[in-house]
Structure formats: C-alpha cells, structure tokens
Amino acid sequence: MSDATLLARAYAFAAARHADQRRKGESREPYLNHLCEVAEIVALATGGSDANLIAAAVLHDAIEDTGTTHGEIAASFNADVASLVSEVTDDKSLPKAERKRLQVATAAKKSTRAKAIKLADATSNLRAIAKSPPADWTVERRREYVAWARAVAEGLRGTNPALDALFDAAAAHAEAALAEPSAR
Image 1: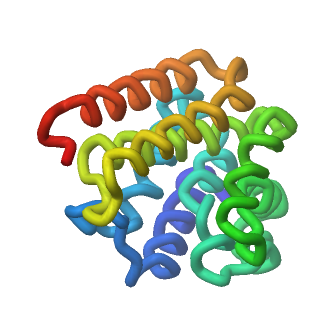
Image 2: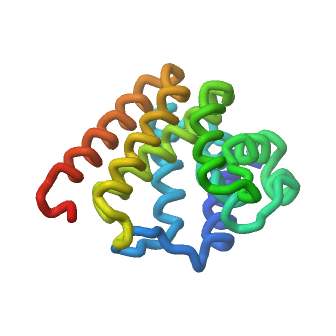
C-alpha cells in the first residue's frame, strides 16, 4: 500500500472508531482533532519520513479508547503500525494512578518511534490544557497534570530535538496559562 493510501486509511479508520468521542475540554472538540494534531506534530518533527509512524500517531488511542484490537490494526494496516500503537497503549484494566505511574517508569524504555508518538501526544494534551481545560479540573489538578507530563517527558527526551522543543513550549504555555488570574 502506498504511503498516501496508508495515511488516508488511518485517518478514515480513526474517524470511524472515534466518531462519538469528544475532548474533555470546555470546547468539547471532536477527539479526532487531537489525533490529527499528534500525527501532524510527528510528521513535522520527522520531516514526514516515516508513514507507518505517522499512521500509528493517528491511531495511537484506538486500542486504548475504542476496543480496537492489535490484530485489527495489523490486518487493516501492517504489523509495524500495530506494534507501535500497542507500544503506546495503556493497560486500561489497571487503576488510573498505576497507569500514570507506569507511563513515567517505562517512558525511557520505549522505542525511539514510540517515544516520538508519546511526546507528541503529551504536547497536544498540554496545548489542550492551556487552551480548553476540562471545566471540572481545578487549577491544582491542571498543575499536577503538567508536572506529571514533564516527568513522563524526561524519559522520552533526546531522540528528536524538534519534539523536545515543541513539548517544552507547550509545557511553558500551559504553566503560564495557569499563572493567569483567570485560570480559575
């Protein structure tokens, strides 16, 4: 399958699987916007040189959030894309606190390509925290999220300077937004 076909199929697959999902932020934007942003961050930071990586970025939450299986992704795309998606997928059978702890503990052990997806995902999430935080998140909860994201990012750093810089900018922007009096 050509790179263009692979990517078109990944976007269509993600759109179908995440069709009814919305971001948690006040703007309640379609979840697909997040997936597109993560893929764009990865594509720009890598010069668009790895279509499988970009497709996996589009699909990074499919297993975790839609019930899609590793096998479905492998059959619809290829084993490499499925492997990358699986590598960045949290085990939802674990309590949330344990999943968050494991993300920090395992970040440095991920493959270089999985680190790229995870760092792009964290960057997108921090941008969302700054722009449209969940209405029920207190300022303290948002601060804790930024601190946790920074802890995860420490294990992901060093494989792509552009991704490191984008993450740092997003984290600084999120922290600045929290310092504003209107942060609630």
